[in-house]
Image 1 (cartoon, helix red, strand yellow):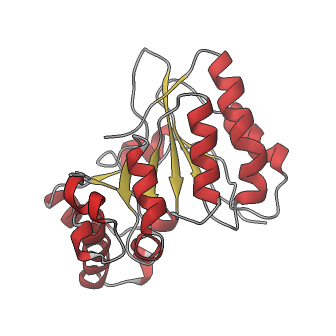
Image 2 (cartoon, one colour; image 1 turned 30 degrees about the vertical axis):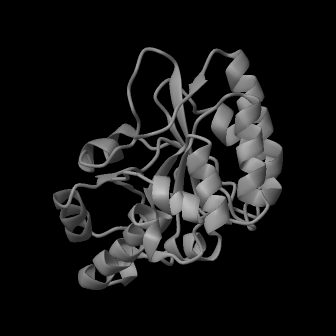
Image 3 (cartoon, helix red, strand yellow; image 1 turned 90 degrees about the horizontal axis):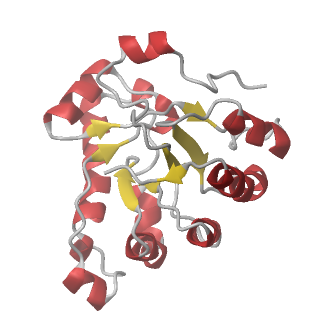
Length: 225
């Protein structure tokens, strides 16, 4: 069984106050985020669910997956969602030197900000693409203070989370995953899901219900800029 915080406590938020844990507002806005894509079929399924509820979200993409699936990446952008950097190949900051980590982030950044460098992008995308992205989420939530400091210095906001669905945890049931969200969500919450193969059995159950029920409760799903 894995151990982690489902709800990030106020002490952690105060200690690491230079990170974004939630986005306070009095308009019932919440922020769905999806890590690890784009992933064939799964990311596209997520987009369909979001569209049903006119919901916007933020996708923290892995550069290697952008490179392999540019057509799905284009679709995420074209449907009005935000894009964040999640390193090129899902680097664990605690196990990586600062220099190597920053280079990995920049490799992902080059694909996000300059699709002309990717020969797989459509000609239309290359001509019209004008994406700006300065948000970053560290894989596993693991990043060294110096790595974070250097990323902030070059303009990144480091986006963590207020609520962890734990959809990636294969030892929990889909019902428990949904409970993790419903028990802890509040206005301003940043909620983590994963558009990955591993998470999909939990995500397939949890996401439609999250969108439907929280919409009925008056929550609005916004993207992070």
